[in-house]
Length: 256
Image 1: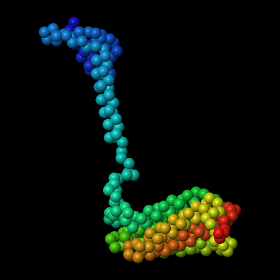
Image 2: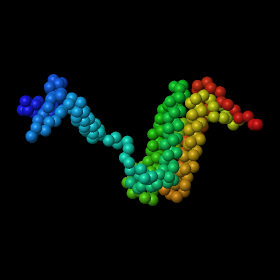
Image 3: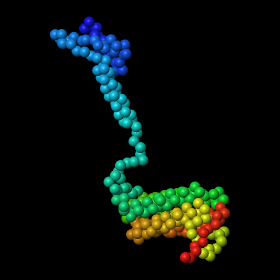
Image 4: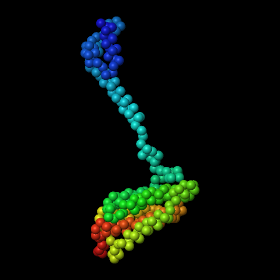
């Protein structure tokens, strides 16, 4: 009897998933080892042992799955201690004036994106707003390349061209020539697109203010500050143009 029981045990032990018929044969069977010391291997203990092995196998599978999942390139962990890298490779604290300016410019870009999504085909604003969003990324590259700590190649690659300012001025002249003359102060209004363009204008002013110290310390080209100054004018005129194109009335300031 002992050899057959041992054979059954060996057969069952070789298969982690087990075999129901083998388990039934093992249930209640007595296995004699040595001088007659008996061990009772009950169904319950076998099932507990089996669940334990299955659990280990399952955790191993999860571990393999974690190892096989490729890490996303979105996070690098390099900024976890409160610093970040500029285009020239220099690391600075995230509250450095340069990153304050970059953050304001990024916020401005997002605000313009929202306004663009609300722009109607009648206004014709989608194309210039898209171009401005791209120019703001160029502007950010210029800000992220401080003149005093960057080599000539990087400075030239991120140089912000005055032609970008000229283009914005052309858009302003074209829209303003077709708008009614301002006789009163107006409030942010004139429909959803117009109101969002007014909001973008205020963010643009803040971005300009954050750039001024960098221009004054000769870390950033003056053209960057000039562009933001002109862009705030464009956003004001574009807000009025959006209201007119879409048939919305602008709200006039009333003195209290």
